[in-house]
Amino acid sequence: EEEEEEEEEEAEEEGEDGAAQLSPDEKFINKLSKQLSDAPEGEEEEGEDAKAPEGFSKLKIAEIMQTGLYQPFTGGQYERTGRGQMIYLNGDVYVGEYVKNRKQGFGTYRYKAGGYYTGKWFNNQKFGIGCQVYPDGSTYKGEFAFNLRDGYGTYKYVNGDIYVGEFKGNKKHGFGRFKFAGDRTVYEGLWQSGVFFSGKWILENGTEFEGSFKGGVPSGNGEFIFPHLVFQHKGTFNGTNWRGAAVNRIDEKARVNAINESKKSPVPVYLLVGASGVGKDTLLNEVRDRLAPNYFIARRVITREDLDQEETESFEYATEEQFETIKENLIGTWEAHGYHYGIYKQPIVRAISNKRSPILSISRTQVESISKTIQELCPTAVIKILLVETSTDVVRERLVQRGRDSEDEIEERLSRNADLSNVIKNDFGEQVVVVDNSSSIQDGVDTLLGAINA
Image 1 (cartoon, helix red, strand yellow):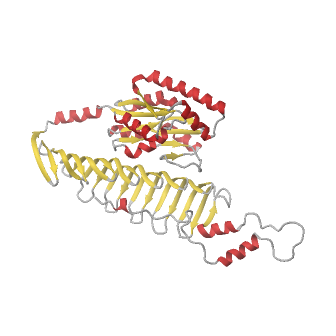
Image 2 (cartoon, helix red, strand yellow):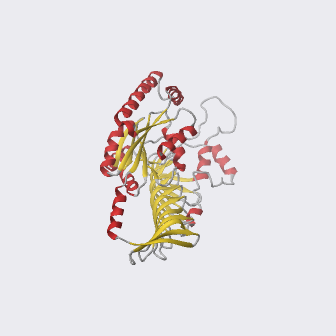
Image 3 (cartoon, helix red, strand yellow):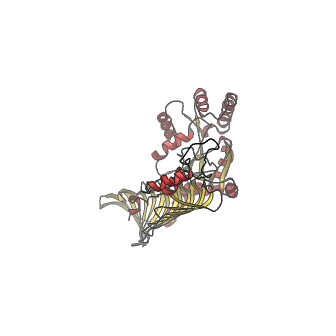
């Protein structure tokens, strides 16, 4: 397998990040800014102050010379909001949507060095569904987060190899299927940080090896299945040496029954809930990199447009209008803090069918309806509720620090939080596991991991 794309850095996007250098002609800047911004030289006299034409300043001139030329299709000239085209000094071109001078919405970025990206943006970063064509001709279509391949997608290599599956931080991670164009063999199973470590190696003639892998090659216990010879051979790989044990004839009926039964085996689905201020999203972000690939953290769709908030969650941005059009594809929707939230159905169903346990961060008001929908879509799903709680004093302190609510509103929220938590405990009983996040983040992370892995 070729892993060049895992090691190569994508072409740097210059322009808005200030990679291009200022023009060396400082005299031109000073002269032009003097004409447009400064008071004229000569005798001082009383009267109206001399003012530059509205919209011009030395800073604006410098910004244009640093970044490039912007042509609005909608919106204003001096704040990039709406649709427009940006021509960067290095020759790159972006055509698409902006919000408050940042790429946000749908747009296409073409690199002068070759290749392009077209798809969703949020806060100047590739975020959501998109297509990246790389300079060497390889392509990726799927989900992005923080400018990286993150989520589900398809990567087509120049040599004809194809990977369809999950990514995290630009690397194959989770369940995926890699088909080699040269020998037409297939790796199908679990990947971790770009390396295949558990699953099936399927040869062109139908022979399969199923077991563990190390460094992308069979290692440890496993079994060969030879359908054309109607037998299976169990054993262990030690380096390149295969030490076979029992050889058994394949009972095709029993094999099919075993496959069907495995499809019926229960798959835990975790619903992570908690009141505002208990830190459930902080905990989820902390455990993200520590979870095994057989867990799947569901990506939320959010209508938030707050560009000043530091993003740590991998989510998909949608406008209010877009959110309305995709509602039927969501497993549940809710509103909080003036924004709409939802989670797509398809990734949850796909994860469960691949025997991966989804983790969904949802509103406490949606536990019953989302549980019902998941079990209707996937009868093998076993719902477990992870209820994050924190002492009242800690939550009160966090809400005060946020500064969103008055003292009366905070006390009302705390009372409502206790009521909702009690309802969940009473209604769902043994399905509920309480995760105490009253002390340090590390203690909370350890408690959450313990509840998931129990």
